[in-house]
Length: 105
Image (cartoon, rainbow, N blue to C red; front, side, top):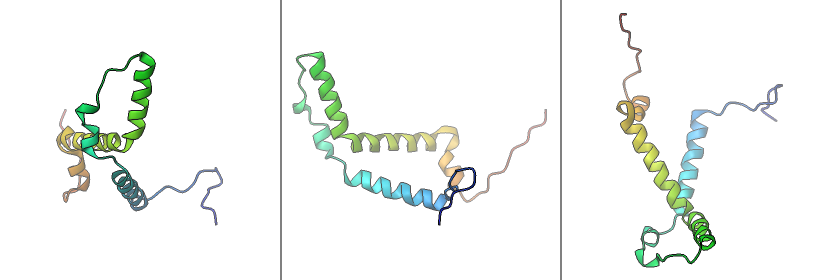
């Protein structure tokens, strides 16, 4: 049975289904990453002979270490959300309900 509405849109995903999919994708990302020592191996660096070779190396590097770069970006986003505006993740997942603040003007 299809969950499509007459307008053609599917059902709105629940938070639980979103979180379970995000957790599964994160576990897949972590399991397919390359060793960090290989990423930071300075002896593997050398100057390319041409611009074409440099672009080719960059593309291969991005493709090969994609899971590592994605994991670094996820960590940066997580830290940014936790630090910015007094810890947005703490507010969302905290014990205290969020209450609006009113100011007299």
